[in-house]
Amino acid sequence: MSREKLFNIRFSDEEWGRVEKLCTFHGINAASLLRMLLKKEERDLDARTPGWAPTPAQSRAAQTWLAIESLAVELTDPDLQTELAKVKNLRFYFHGRRGVPAATLPQEKVALAALQAAAGDRRSKAARDRAFSALEQLTDAYMQ
Image (tube, rainbow, N blue to C red; front, side, top):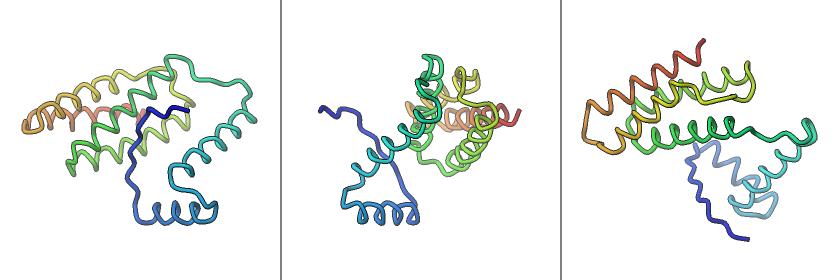
């Protein structure tokens, strides 16, 4: 089995404690634990909604969000991190009410482009400010 996708994640001390506890209990490493939990969650999803798979638009929406989150984390700006945390909470609530995103919101596309520009020119305060403003607009969109 080829494993070509790389996934990085940062944990709080509390979260890492959970990872260590479960790894110790199951006798596996963190990568195997994540794979096991994903497989279990997928089985649960298939039991609740047999045959469900995301549409291409839903997949693109998820990929756009993952790119937004990844770029915002990569920029390591405290203000961007704070705004990202607000956006994440509101996004969770927004999609909890409305279900799986049917498509990428226009504000998500703007946020992604602004974050890509800020990542491309890390010294530009203007690019950083545009990224922050785009995240604020995304926050507003999720509040509707």
